[in-house]
Amino acid sequence: GTSIYGSFVQHYLEKPFLLGGLKFDLRIYVVLTSLHPLQAFLCEEGLARFCTKSYMPPTRENANDAFMHISNTSVNGKSPLFDYQSASDVGTNASTRPL
Image (tube, rainbow, N blue to C red):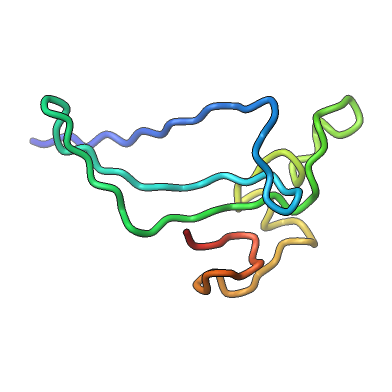
């Protein structure tokens, strides 16, 4: 039978890029069909997921503030600041936005 394995790549940045003062991540989908020669296909759609609180470098007081430091939707979806606007419109201020 055929086995299918999923993988993800992640790298912590000490000085993260911010948009509108918010930490974010990009969810981009790539399919590798060959390593030798390298052949990859990038999906035309992806997501940008945003924290719901403005970023400040981690301190003892804010290091556990998940709404400031973790951009995962399952975390920020519990924030009273989570923006449920339609994420299908480019230019939206929703907490999850299309690329």
